Image 1 (tube, rainbow, N blue to C red):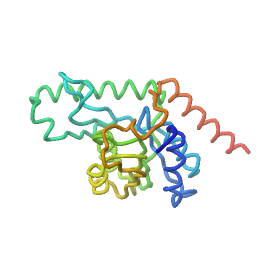
Image 2: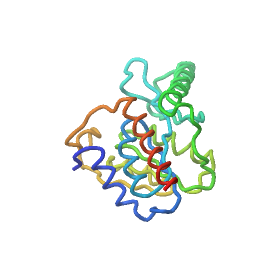
Image 3: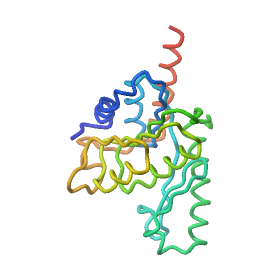
Image 4: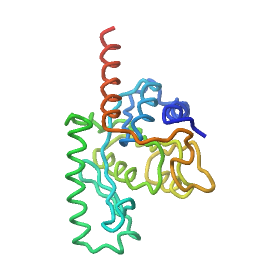
Length: 216
C-alpha cells in the first residue's frame, strides 16, 4: 500500500490538508514515525518536533509490552496485560523507562524542549499503530499540557485500535485498516529500521529549511 515511509507521509499529508498553513504542531513518535512526520510537516507548512514515549516491556518478553510512558511522565498501562505483572515490578519498569526517555531526548532532540503545546492543534504522527501504547501515552501528555486539539494520525492500524484512538483523540486520521492486520511492516514495500542518526539528520534538516525560509 505504501512504497516506504516517505510515500506514506506524503499520502497522510494529503489527508490532513485542512491543517495546511494553520500553525499546527506536528509531533512524530520516533523512530519510525519521524520519516512520516517530516513529510506531513513539510506539506502542511507546520512546526515539527518529536515526542518521546517508550513502551513498557514485559521482563520475560521485551518485544511485547503492557503500556507506555511519555516524556512528561504520563503513563498508560494496559490493564489486561498488566494483570500478570506485580505492582512493584510495574513501578520498576516505569522508572527505568522514564530514564530511557530522558536519554532518548538527550540523544535525538539534543535536550531541546518541546514547543509550547497549550492551546495549539497538535498532530501526533507514527508510521503505524500496532497496540497503540506509545500513541496513547503521547495523547495523555498532550492533554496534560493543555493542547487545544489533538489529532492522532498514522498510515495504518487495525479497526479496533482506530476506534479507540478516535475516542481518545479529538480527531483520528488513518489511511488503511487492513482486515488481517498483523504488523505495521505488512503495508510497506520497503521496510527498514530507522537509526538514531537518521532521526537526528531529519530534525536538523527540517530546522535548517525553516531557518533558510525565515531568512529569505
